[in-house]
Length: 119
Image 1 (cartoon, rainbow, N blue to C red):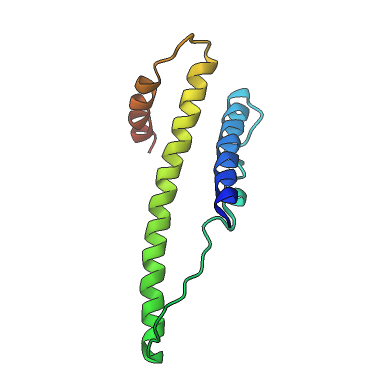
Image 2: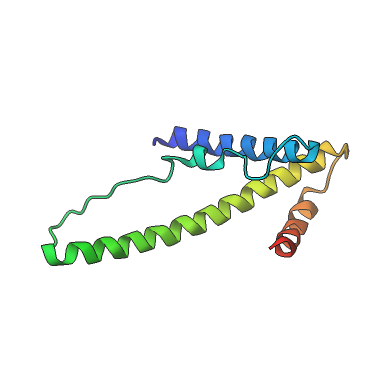
């Protein structure tokens, strides 16, 4: 995927999470029906090539180590992305509550406490 497509995926995630929250609030949505997995399909896929040759007996071991590192990185990225999406929704909700000028920083500072009590 090109950078432009990845940016578009990010925007799609924001819209998807926002729509899900609206639907849940209105009683018309179903938890877990965000389209999140479909939007990410292919976004985190990549291939690597090495500029050196590796003895055949070490290839499987190196692949395993690389896969573990990538899995850990992907998990961390997903957690950060969830936080960004939650922050986006929190700010949008503050504006939708007809506050003339919501305190964005306060809303974002309160959000980690909300997340901690949910889990």
